Image (tube, rainbow, N blue to C red; front, side):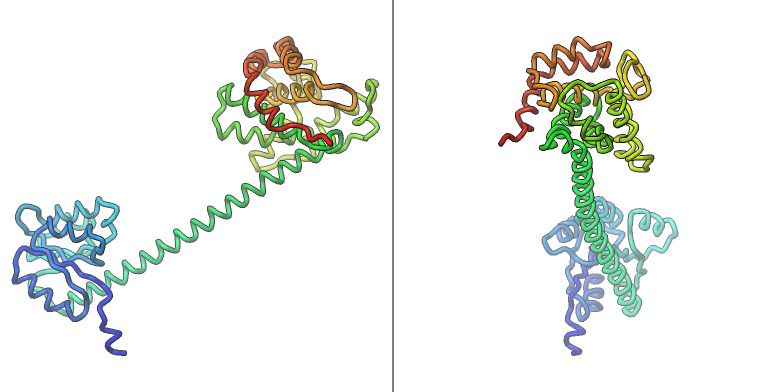
Length: 354
């Protein structure tokens, strides 16, 4: 048991240009630690950067060519060696010398002539402190990795919940629910081309999937009616905007707040003749204006109980025509110029057929 206790498991590097000093320190330490020596600063740096770096360095200050302060500065600036404790060993005890060493990152000072008990006690203390620091750093890394994994899982869950929430209403009048996936990609594409950043466009794409959530409250006899709606029936359809806004409610979540705004405003028109608030122009939130273009285009090019699907050319012609009336004219013009990207999205998110 005593042999195990005294088996050296730490390596100390002693740096001094005076061989007598090296011999003294080595004699004090070699029964307690593995000891390496260096007679100048350049050799010390080479040893510290080796595949088996020391656990602690005893560094003389007064050395020719490269003094101890220079060595310390170099090691503390390198990621590979910056955490190795450095204890200066010097016969100079001036306050300014100590201050400079601590500013450079030294852990402690030992004064020559050295005392074995003091040297061993200081080394033991700083090795223990460094082991504790490493342990805490490892625990932080593990915990950070766990939190990152948890955040990824939460993000994936959030996306899936929003996807399913958005598709819930679509299953009422579109069995595949593919409309929300496709139109939200149109909205993302248009948002990016309109100057929104990638994160903003991604957030908008997710929030846009909740645009028709209020349809959950519309009776089937109206929602699924194959013929033209009466004025009374259309008035009921219009309530889905307010209904979607109320279902989502006021939330702290940015994406839910955005989804509520889109649900409320995606049927407003640039000319003020939309619903439910008769907003016009830039009084309509940009997110509502972006969603309106993608929503109408996908509705036009999709089969519905009351209509056949329009061709891409026909739908884009209507978008262009309605710029300045139904749609923000700038957004309409941008969207019409994205035909190839739009067709690509259509190909990726096709309706399933029996």
